[in-house]
Amino acid sequence: MADPPRSEIFPSSRLDNDAGALFVLQSKGEWWHAGFHLTTAIVGPTILTLPYAFRGLGWWLGFVCLTTMGLVTFYAYYLMSKVLDHCEKSGRRHIRFRELAADVLGSGWMFYVVIFIQTAINAGIGIGAILLAGQCLEIMYSSLFPQGTLKLYEFIAIVTAVMVVLSQLPSFHSLRHINCVSLLLSLGYTFLVVAACINLGLSTHAPKREYSLEPSDSGRVFSAFTSISIIAAIFGNGILPEIQATLAPPATGKMLKGLLLCYSVIFFTFYSAAISGYWVFGNSSSSNILKNLMPDQGPTLAPIVVIGLAVIFVLLQLFAIGLVYSQVAYEIMEKKSADTTKGMFSRRNLVPRLILRTLYMAFCGFMAAMLPFFGDINAVVGAIGFIPLDFVLPMLLYNMTYKPTKKSFTYWINMTIMVVFTCAGLMGAFSSVRKLVLDANKFKLFSSDVVD
Image (cartoon, rainbow, N blue to C red; front, side, top):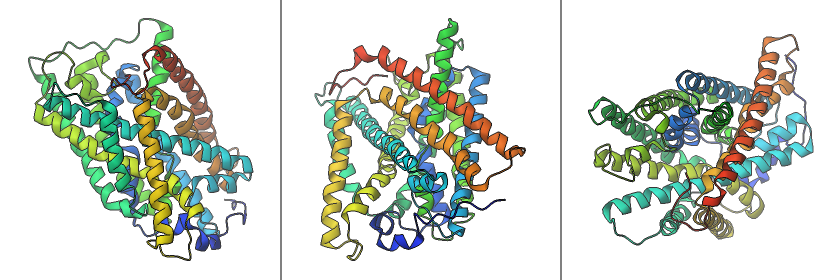
């Protein structure tokens, strides 16, 4: 096995004067903390979209795609962790995705490509988390006060204010307890939704089920690639190097344990949500299975207590997700604004942190209120962001680092994954843009009606 290139563009001594590393990406965590962070980054309310993804694929292709995406992402994250471990053993510990890519690939432009894609993903998820949390509050409010006059953007403002307060937690490592609770919340609302779906499916009030796909060949193709993009985005995280950076060195072997913890939760939540939701609602599955359980017309299809608890659990986890995906922005800001010769909580560092993080959250909240059709935009971001970072780049980094021979199985499996998912990403981006164009006439700024 060949050694990776010995570049000194990111020497380990740089961390002593790096405020982003010292204050935000503190390396103090254990492997289970990494598991909590990974689970929060991957297992979110988007899993309630899986029955909708199955709707565009059908039973057998849905199972194949879900399983394939799970295996490929686990493999990809494991390879990236090995590359990070190898660099650390060579005296070049990387704590940021962009630095790892620029070092291993040896091309300055890759630094900017990765930072652009990663920033787009993180900002997109931050905006989406605030929007979805605002929707959750609106659902609870409308249930308690059917004639209430509050609008969606007002709930988004409330969520943003809470996020501003929570954003002052200084480091990624300080989120470990919040992310542990987030893991439990994901299990909680999955159990509630799955139980509600099974109960409905076995009752006399079960809806009529139809599992047919689009009637036209072109419609089936577009729906299939849109569904593949949805599943890929659900499995993506794009911040694995930053999560591994929170581990106390040496990090070798710890990330694998964290991945196993995370994927144990994924196995339970993803399959149970996809199977139960699609089994009950078939090709009438909504982009959020809670909408099926709470139809606009008629009574709810599950006990209101169950739905209420699920919505509360989702709301609480969205705060954790928003915090996790904000860490890259915070470390970029802190690297430029903080002074490492002063304490983390000194006035010199506390005031800029308070101002910059408040402005960042205010920006995300404003965008969420202005663009309640952000789901369509996010689908495009997922296709052009998550797939390159999580399905293509890890294999490229591994091949460049370890240089497996072109006759080896590892080389060809990596090349196959890169080619297949590059094509899938391009088709997914095209399908997502197509849906964006088709829904364009529904878009209204600061509307209370979210485009599905």
